[in-house]
Amino acid sequence: MPQAPSLPLIAPSILSADFARLGEEVRVLDAAGADWIHVDVMDGHFVPNLTIGPGVVKALRPHSARPFDVHLMIAPVDRFLGEFAAAGADIITIHAEAGAHTHRSVQAIRGLGRKAGISLNPATPVTVLDYLIDEIDLVLVMSVNPGFGGQGFITSQLRKIEAVRAMIAKSGREIRLEVDGGIDIETARACVAAGADVLVAGTASFRGGPAHYAANIAALRGAG
Image (cartoon, rainbow, N blue to C red; front, side, top):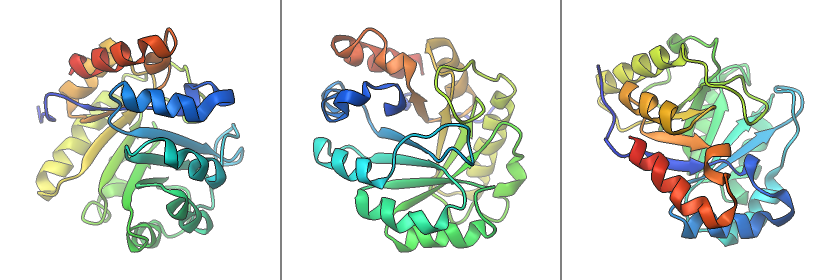
């Protein structure tokens, strides 16, 4: 079975943060050892929830030097790429279904000087990557249906993680393999064994409040 590096990067999702004090939450995550800050952007159309826009990303940017991993669950997506890049996104991940011309969208992200990611919903086949793998920097496997935090892990996605890891290995390129949804100590271990090297964790990162963030992040990283 293809293997990822033994210690995964941990990207806490601010979807589970206290929205009344987001700046402070991001500062605490940074100090607690988060590798990336994961920002879930939802439009109430592509997914059944509404979260934040580029203005919030811009406001949060001064609070951490960590990479901002911005996951756009919006459609159509192209018109917002420049705004999120300008707001401070380092990685911009879009869904394969979020526009008519996914390859063009990926080119646009890279043209903005940002790393480009493709997200796969639970029912999205890995074959959508066939003609994108040479253009992207990250693949995000959704292990829940996107839209809400706190959902249970869909175990069938472990096979997808394995398949994507094999595609990455075949490409010979340095492409991150990220997993988002239902991540805890047990599922983190399974995802890393299947080939993941970045774990998005909301509930598991924020459990217990700020005093526990460092221990939560360390535990997730150690699960790899």
